[in-house]
Image 1 (tube, rainbow, N blue to C red):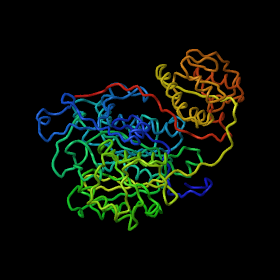
Image 2 (tube, rainbow, N blue to C red):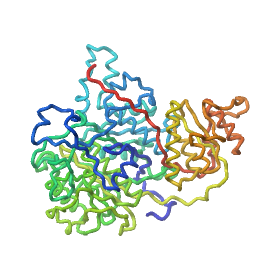
Image 3 (cartoon, one colour):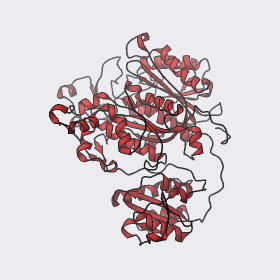
Image 4 (cartoon, rainbow, N blue to C red):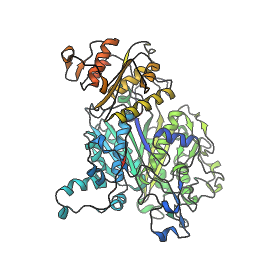
Length: 593
């Protein structure tokens, strides 16, 4: 790991400061990591009555009832974004999922959209076919003017601009269409925008909902879909992969700026590259080793990184011997002659093939592996394909989970994504730099912690989630928690505040039966509006003792605006990951206009 937090950061480095994921069997990135480290497969094998396809398909001897099911594919919480139920139903599933995920990434990074005075780039990929399968587009001529707004909610092109609009942000909005390499292309374009100074921060990702949902697939020999529904990356008995759905977004910022802003950094994007096979492909849609190799090598060159320092390679890994051989050959050409230095793995064995978001599953796996210094096992790999000839390559299959101790002294991971139509993309991630030392927390100093939500039920769930989070992570400092809550969350109508002196007091205050230093919207003491000093950002704290903070809490929960920047002025507090908003999704589905 980097030793000096005071170093000059490479201007080309981009920090990953927030992440959001929903995958089969995992509604959060924390649940996703649990799936990986415990070696679970979350592809479902469906009962006949659960499959939404034509009866003739189900009875085909080649029909495989395997699917990576996304249990929230048809649900959404429009109230958080001020969206009507009618518009929520008009929005495609991918539009809705991307919007919620982008919100979660911003909150995970510790930022409130209402306080941001910055250009936020929004880059995302989706599956254009989903919109057509969801429902036919509205006819603007016959339906009338209202159809224009509804059709923009329906359109796959406007997924990113919708996210900017409904989150109250401004910036670039680019929806990319690069088949299964979509997530990587979105991150690549976002990094370019940041490095060119066109955006201050960027949200990049993808959303994929396969319709009808859930459904299996028809197996065809030597095609990418598995004969038995299991994906076996690098295995001699692999027959392909299963289809799945999901959504992944990341919040990005130039690394030097992120460190200066005291952001929490999961990982660093050191380099990215994209290209297309074009006419050089041996068959349209298949990986072309020389072109893929050039893409991988370009990402390392952009990052100024030598291959011997990259000790994790997260492969596209379809689990089909032919495609696995092409990819390993390409990666070996890019990495060169060194042997047995790089772990190779594939996440599709866990969650299947998420289409435009499949690269996102691999990127989040790599980012969390860097963050936790752990290499998860590649599951369903029981008989390594000898034709891959791993002993003569730089790669060692990650058959069992292991602590990550790199020979080069720094952890780096390459993640490849390949899309039909000849799209190649590669991301190079590096572990976050060491965090500067700071003085121990001022124990016993009173601090103000705040929460808000749209209604009392959501507020209660927020309290429960935060209490569980604090109990699970005893290393969190109270000053960081309060700093993140007060400045990194959108302020809503139902509010809760507590003045506490320790983590233990905060955990106790969050309990349902809490008494003492807690102030809520429904039972707040009255305050004298004339007793507070004001600036353009609201009430200016008169002090930091218990009485001053209690008065501030009472004013805030009854609807007054508070200048939280002034409250935390001069502190060394940092943004830390905390639970994001507890959406209350309801089912929205449209069959016609």
